[in-house]
Length: 71
Image 1 (tube, one colour):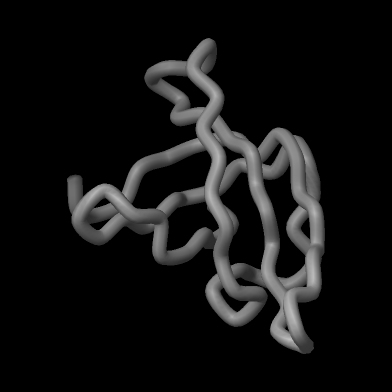
Image 2 (cartoon, rainbow, N blue to C red):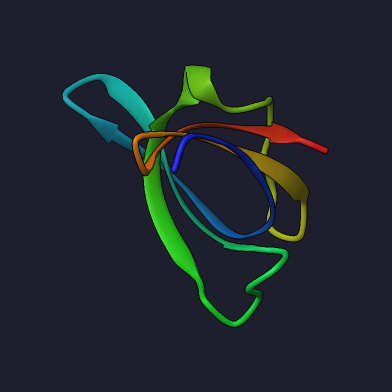
């Protein structure tokens, strides 16, 4: 899958690995709300201050999450 899908953000954890910051996120697509998904993205690939409950758009490239944006 490549492109964008609408989703809801369920959990966000900021982590630091050797000085590089990432978000570990849990979300579900709006068309499959009972199937949670997980991803790790760089903080630069997310909007400022993501929070659980946010309506988001998830960007994919070859089935890999490459970023999130607030809807």
